[in-house]
Image (tube, rainbow, N blue to C red):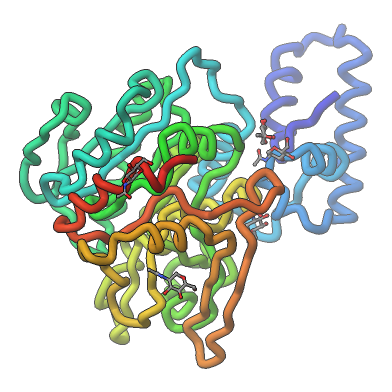
Length: 389
Ligand SMILES: *[C@@H]1O[C@H](CO)[C@@H](O)[C@H](O)[C@H]1NC(C)=O
Ligand SMILES: *[C@@H]1O[C@H](CO)[C@@H](O)[C@H](O)[C@H]1NC(C)=O
Ligand SMILES: *[C@@H]1O[C@H](CO)[C@@H](O)[C@H](O)[C@H]1NC(C)=O
Ligand SMILES: *[C@@H]1O[C@H](CO)[C@@H](O)[C@H](O)[C@H]1NC(C)=O
Ligand SMILES: *[C@@H]1O[C@H](CO)[C@@H](O)[C@H](O)[C@H]1NC(C)=O
């Protein structure tokens, strides 16, 4: 017998109601007795560590749940129960098999894409393995290539750091999820360029079972300093994570993001620029990492496959001009095989992590930003050379 975690009532009530006659088979009585005994035992000895298992679908946790039905530390609200069971089931149901698995490339841009020509070079020859979606928030893009023509999704204005950014990401995901061939979903900006050829990128994303979402715990003012008590009790300070906006997620995580309204609403209401006490919170830097880290911590790589250089320590990352586009630059970026996160508190702790892909150390990055449009010609010239693998 398998008592589904946390839902003994759901499974037993209909049974006992339906068979109300006195000729109830013996096995039902035995079953109910067993369940009652186990519930009493659990009541007397509440299980430890249940919450970390609650959303996980791993075999270990299923096994634990079998023996230790959960007694929550606090009573969950209706919305929380719904959110948790929906996320749990999405993660435990395998994707429908598809003959033609594709990667969805989702471009978040104000208007035309300065590197469309470069992307066309990247996509050429792989027509059945990708799909493109463009969310242009300011003006209708002028596309040059049939790959991009007709791929604009209905879009709305996007304000930097506001929830409208997350809304645009969800809008792109909703469009891309309609194609059941899409198995992995990459968010890119107009200033992003590819660092490897299509085959390399496709295999890197598809031949593993995780999402590449940047995620780390920053105890400083730009990390948990942005947490608001209004997020309680569903989101606790210890759950708060930070990461780059540029994600790449597997289909199940895309569905989890779209199914969520509880946590999304918390961010919409309590994580915005210029909040009380002069606090700034940017939903696009916290919502995804915090949610996915709560739902399936082992399902995310904790780094983004899009490289950006913050080493100058300014408000904006380094932007590359035409002259910066050299083999050396691309060699340097594609050689990086560990991520560096620095906390924003006084300690400025530096955390280095190897980029482990299926347990093997590999280069971390598939894409890079930010490039000025003027870099296009140089990028086109050297693209075939630096993307040999
Ligand atoms: C990586 O791991 C996934 C999931 O276990 C597996 O399906 C895939 O074959 C592995 N890829 C390689 C190249 O070993
Ligand atoms: C990915 O696959 C590996 C190896 O099969 C497995 O141990 C791991 O639990 C899987 N992770 C997820 C998040 O599915
Ligand atoms: C990402 O970090 C979490 C802890 O925050 C850890 O449990 C998980 O294993 C990490 N992911 C990978 C792929 O190592
Ligand atoms: C590449 O890396 C080397 C060694 O760290 C550094 O000296 C050089 O300036 C880098 N070049 C570029 C173009 O980033
Ligand atoms: C790229 O490689 C080709 C063939 O190896 C070579 O002819 C060409 O000059 C290279 N381009 C640059 C910009 O170095």
